[in-house]
Image 1 (cartoon, rainbow, N blue to C red):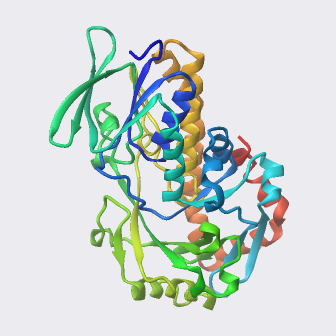
Image 2 (cartoon, rainbow, N blue to C red):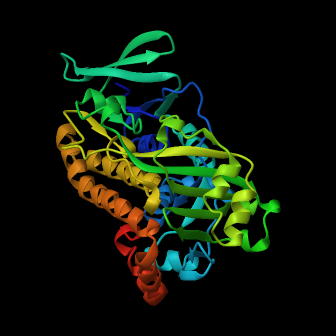
Length: 399
């Protein structure tokens, strides 16, 4: 053991895993982060970092590291897809900071990962190893965990006081805990198509510093500028049962721009222009899984998608893994006994994460309705007004 520090192994160097490493290091732990990929790729696209996430990232110095790469939208604007009519507008920017005591930001996933890695590099208590995956674990005769690793072609073993499975939807740690593996995943029937568009290819109205949400039948579109306005991030989520045409494991399924454009052929012209301006679309099949009866056993626990995968309809996947990381470190700081601390962590996080999961699933139906139900939805949004709309997010952003 390094000095008086207890030692943790974190499986996964994504947003949740790196945030957990930083939070644990702040709480006095030595942390070894093991990432199964041989390189940390900038896959994915934009992320919405709501105030419940940025207040934690700010304490860790990560928001400062993002610098000008993160953008603070002025408003959330909700539009009807068929004619572009504005249904609702919720002020963000200074209004978000005042209401929820933290900023609402958007950033590229790769930029956020780099900002996290920059903070990790400043922490001597954290070591990051790539091409290294957790394969199994057991309690050793000294009471510590013996953790089997696969590092490149080598099989190795390490010891630690704590193992955190932050290894995503197809978590090996979750499977070893007996909480289900890949066969338990359920395809939601929707595919998220993502693209980054050169802002110079778009008219000024589509480059405004807003988060835009277009609601259509069986589909919705989100777009906002990134990287100082140099690019616009677009995500088109479409109900599509043809999952077999896509690779289940990954974000990088290529899409035909003409086919994707057909999905919005009956939408208002600005939405169609945005879709047409993207050269490269990447598809991401959306999966869910049944809730686990528990997340922890002994000195092993789960975090982020490994514990509670999030449908993207509340833009909370990254934010909830960040919340997990902070809560885990807090509980370990408050309890010397690790199983007791992990029990407290689970009790603190499971109800909230479960509510976010449920609300995100419900939001999918709200976004994609059609016909008379869509008319009622649109009328309700118009009558709600900005203050009542913001109040609907107080439970989530104000935590």
